[in-house]
Amino acid sequence: MGESLMSWVTGKGWNFRQTASHATDGTDEVKWPTADNGNLDGAYPISGNGTNYGRTLPVSSVDGSRDNLNFTDRRLAGIVFRQNTATQFAFRVDLPATGLYRIRLGGGRYSFGPNVNYVRVLDDATALITLAGVSTGNDQFYDAAGNVHTKANWPTNNVAVDVTFSTTTLILQVGQNSGADSTASVCSHLFIQQVPPTPAFGRYGVRGPIR
Image (cartoon, rainbow, N blue to C red; front, side, top):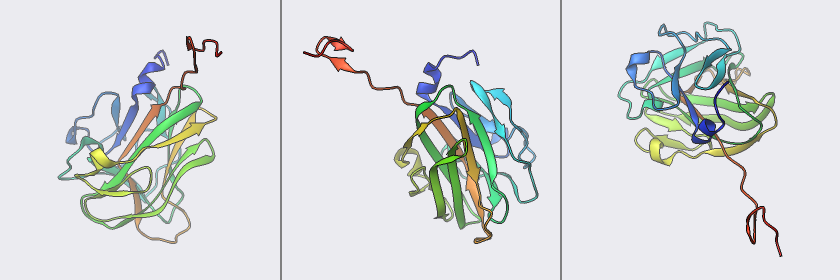
């Protein structure tokens, strides 16, 4: 990608909403979908934010993007959604290397709740984070650990989850296809941060002899 791994140590973010001008993204964050029409335009691979990313499953009539009104944080300014009666929506991000990553998630709506959220983060085909049926009401937002916060509390209290990738393919899945719940799953924000390995310290410093 022509970008050093250092930028991944500080993290990359994707903010999901309908309209680009509805919020101002932070450093190393991008808005997705690529269009402002309420659909999930922007198929993989899109080159940007230091990597390739984008939707890997076709759009349908049971998914889309929306803006959240009265938001307090740019990362919660919108959603992508998928009805829980269809094949999961999938969003791919190419990682720079295998190894340990810190994942943050945010998802919820300012109104039109409740939502019962089924969200997974996969290492290619292997699930590393699974939120199964996390319920959020109006102005409530989940985090990567499945905790539910108010929109005022999520920015400072959301919990990250550290996971190890054996491939360089991260897949975010939203929704479930069992038909057990007819509401929609939503996602507002995905954050990925590479966690560097801990140096081995010896008596004389990093990797020095131990005596």
